[in-house]
Image (tube, rainbow, N blue to C red; front, side, top):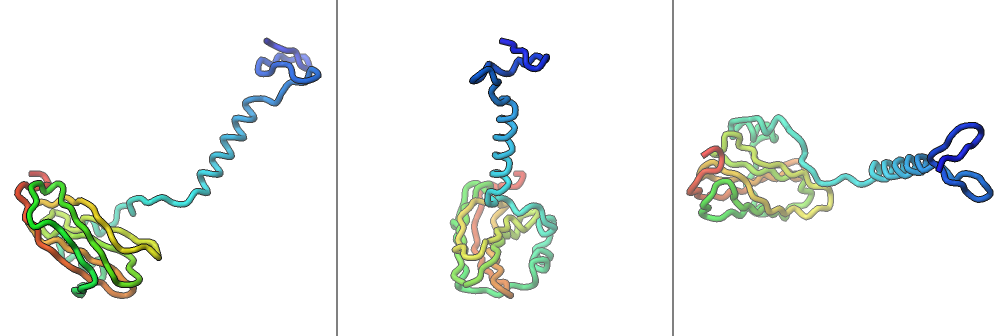
Length: 169
């Protein structure tokens, strides 16, 4: 129903109490939209990929280690666990745990891949340094876990045998 209000037509409103029109629905919609945008902007950040980094474009294992900060030291407190043999190189399960304090990042490397750096995990302060994931490996090789703890790099490695490649085979 169209109501005349001050000489203009207002098709949005039905008569309110005492003949006054209720607030416009469009205004309420805009207010709710603005409130939701403010809430969404103030929400805490979610876990997401760290983005592309120049380290992922390096094709040599030595170049990746140099980009990470030099030669890591082998440490027993960092452990990488992979199966001895995997049927499909496209899904190699990997578990990494680190008992060192102040672990900031964990990197996964596969020496047989065209791009050796497979993954990078940046850990917020207070996070227990443990991860379990699956990675893609081209051929049988040694997999490395490199952890950045404070001012040093530490690593551990494990060999896995792949019966069918996962990077383009």
